[in-house]
Image 1 (cartoon, rainbow, N blue to C red):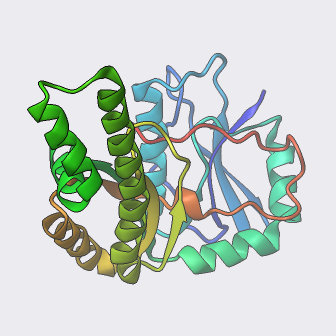
Image 2: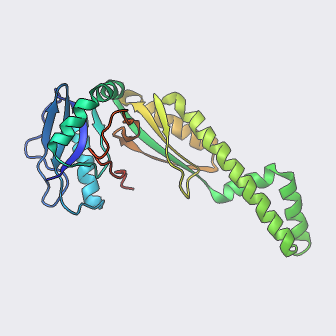
Length: 257
C-alpha cells in the first residue's frame, strides 16, 4: 500500500498522542518511520483521496500537533510515496538537506500575505496622480461622455496606470514586511492578487510581524491585506539536489481558505 507523508522531523521528536489519526475515512493511524537522525510522520494512503476540507484539516491537524512539540518540515497535502522503504530511502539520500532545514526552521512559522487593491480607492489615486487621465476624463465629461475612441483611450490609460501601481504596491508590501521576517518567498501570481508572499517569522516575533502588517494597512488604505497564519513553513522546505524522482509525489497546498 502507498504511504502518505505528513512531514519530516528529527528521530528524537516526542511521540504523537496515542491513537491519533490522519487523512481518510476512517482516519488512518499515524506511524513514524525513522532513518538515522531523521523521521517521517506517515500513514497508509487512502484510495481516491481528494482535497476536501475535512481531509485538508486532518493533514493540517497532524502537522499542528507535531509542530507544537518540535520542528517539523511539512509536506503538502497529497504527498504520497510508493511504500515505506521509498520514504526512508529519501530520508537517507537527502539527510544533509533535511537536517539543515530543521535547524534553520526551528522556532519559526509561516505567514502568507495576499494583497489586492480596493478598486474605488486606487482609481481615485490614479486620477489624482495622472494629469493625462484627468484631462481626458474631464474632456469626455464636458462632451457628454466622449466618442468611442476617447472612451477606449481613457480605459486603456487607466488600466495601464492601475497595472503599474500593482507592481509598485507589490514591491512596497514586501519592503514594509520583510524587516519583521527571517525570510520571504514570493508565491505564484494569480488573478485577484497583486502580491502573494509568504514570510518566515520567529514564533516570538509574531506580534511584531502582525503589527507591521497593521501599520502597512494604515499607511496604504487603498490596499487590502489578507493574512493567513501561523502556518507550518511550507514555502521554506526547499527542494534538495538529490530527491529521487517519483519517490515522494508532491501534493497540493493545504491552505483551506
